[in-house]
Image (cartoon, rainbow, N blue to C red; front, side, top):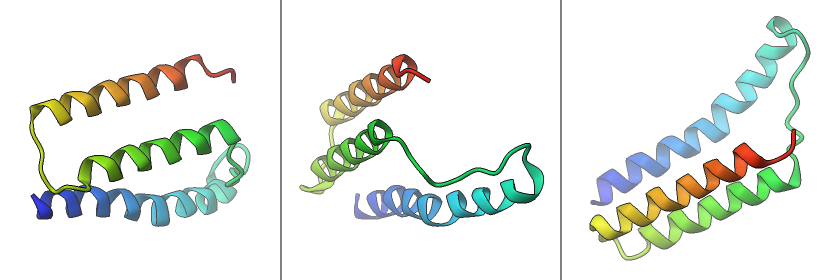
Length: 87
């Protein structure tokens, strides 16, 4: 269980720390307009909530079907929030 948690959380950290800045730098040369790393406060709040939910689920080191179902419900709710947020 520790290995699966470390792989999942480590991959997310690697994407956040490496892929996002690379995409910003790549957009300077390839994109129609340059991208920036200025995020709206509502998007930052959603990321903070997802980090808190992940920390809560991973804190005891155990997992069962109920926690998986709860995570799916939380991720579905976050997806609905993204869908209904104004552009």
